[in-house]
Image (cartoon, rainbow, N blue to C red; front, side, top):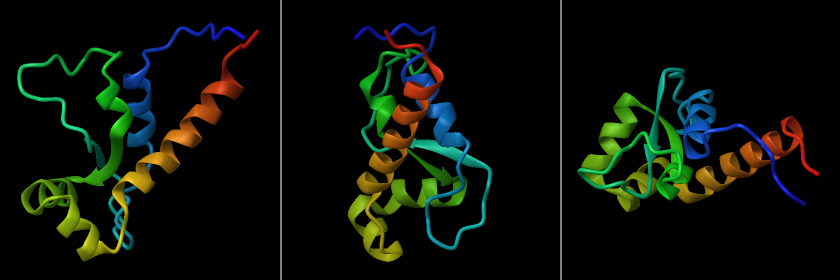
Amino acid sequence: MSYQANHSGGLDFIEFVKEHKCCVLGCKALDVDADHLKTIGMGRDRKKPELIEHYSCIPLCRKHHTERHQIGNRKFEEKYDTNLWYENRTLLVKWIIREFITHEFY
């Protein structure tokens, strides 16, 4: 089975992530960043669709995005009783299903 689609890979996933609200329970912010759990690193072109790091994004509002970077993943997860990688996996599965349904496979 070949996948034939005109898409931008990881950049499409980033746009999908941005369609969701902040993943911190109780946060009502709708304007979110696609926060990379796996860092891209300085000097790398963030616009390259093939970067595997794009698939590690979660939706966080600017406040929570900044806080996560300041205190680190473990403290952030403890404070908000969440698992960031679980949040990412859940969105990634939803995105893959949507991609499968909306594109032709043969």
